[in-house]
Image 1 (cartoon, rainbow, N blue to C red):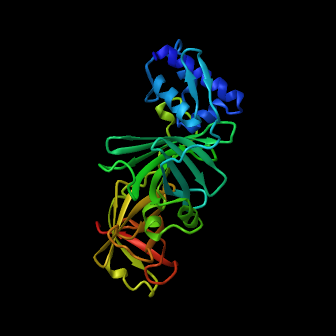
Image 2 (image 1 turned 135 degrees about the vertical axis):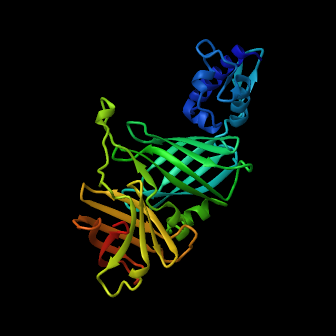
Image 3 (image 1 turned 180 degrees about the vertical axis):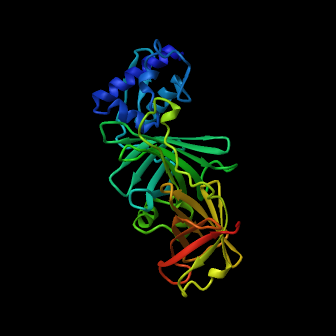
Length: 351
């Protein structure tokens, strides 16, 4: 059977299935193939391989899936019974964990990988996505589209799978998509494998493991939804002149008993490191305007604690005759079980 003949057979099979109430889309889903329209049109699409299958292979897949027979002498498609249920497939079940920007919590989604080709993604909220699964060398790619809405929305998931290309218990990666409010977004994800549907649904109603929460918290990057006419239109961050440097942190409250051992280092107007009793808490700076800024710091990455420790500084530039200084508040759970607020000030070590 040559390429053109196979295309004709594909067309006949699809017509036969349509007469038996099976649509082309359903047929494609059953064999994990999305290019039936191309496969049955050899004039417009003359290539021998489409979506990694020849037309002869597509014919074979359709006939096996639906229990059909083709008579080469008469050119007729026939069968005693069209199979109304798909054959048993190889399905890998994963739960995908991600940071939900809108709800400020860790979200969960159920990913089914069917025959290492087709992907179904279902979220806790009413969202259903379908797409393709592909492994290239040490990396796994999932491209999916949200179904059931007027305007298609797509996402790309990139994972490092290493030398064991299929079935790893845990995979780390990133996603890129558009949020519900139309803002382009990207972030880190964790995929955790489960043996079957029942165990996935059982886990689906529980909260994420604290170790996953620590890894993913606040890991979303978003961009603006406008198109600049020139580079001059790009938004720019506020800068506080002379902000970079080393500082000593002081507290007015007697509760903050470790104040004498705190040192703060600010780098590149966007990174900060706080040293407390030989522990280094790392974080980021958000410059609010030309006088005010916010610093957020967290546990050292090497520490695995049941209760994560946070430091949030809200500071304002203060005029000093001899050195740069800032005053404000620190919100932390370092000294107590819960987040408490402490008046504080920081002074540059350079006079």
